[in-house]
Image (cartoon, rainbow, N blue to C red; front, top):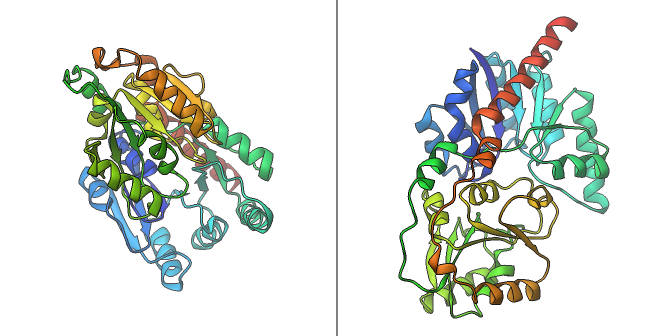
Length: 361
């Protein structure tokens, strides 16, 4: 079986980690063993990945000497056929380390967000890209938005392989009708680990002004802003916070929601949008870089300002939303975002890079 080393930052219940969790069997069926390398100190999702079958190796941050030495050792000891980096920080440096560890091993990097830096930060990122190019890194974008952003802002080309979601779990949830809640309030879900980029406070501030709205807020709050924490505290005090914190029942929460709101400042291809769309949940998205791929999906609407969001919510509250609490599984979108499709594309890329190396050697 071929071996691919996947290099990541801290292992958290976030996009790529959840994708790996749902795709272990697909990798195996295509003849690939994935070894996951998590760098840093906090890895709350490591055991979940181990539980489904992955080998998970934890090392210090790669910018440290001990982290560098550990990564070189792992690549060499596992006789890696592919090195696949998912970390944005120091990606050029990681490419050089990987090349030094095994100069004949192809290196792949997935770019997980629409990074639109300016000034010196943008120039530093261009230098990182140059280092990658020097050692032949092949790049992958998870959405057309990311692909165009990299091309237009950094003159970087990449393969398009869209993210995937846990098809089986969504199918199981969608087979069950929503519980016909007696709650006549509008049930809104917001999902994602809290940070400045997710900017949950943007939408929560608007939502908190409506007495008829209750909220499922799902995600780690260790990096939440004080403003977000204050709003959540007030919602909880008023009895309008139905859930707050991480959950392994995100799909069930979606299935109970009337509406899913995404208010990020920028994204790559967030799995939660694909999940809510496949489940048939109306999804409202802040108009921002990295989410334009979802513009034409069924049930999706965009908002640009808090005033616009406030107006949309006011109009929604006038409808009979509580009478139609049932999941509508969207088969075509489910096929598009299935793990089998994603893994087939990645393993085809891996195999083509290996074949190219054999011909050139």
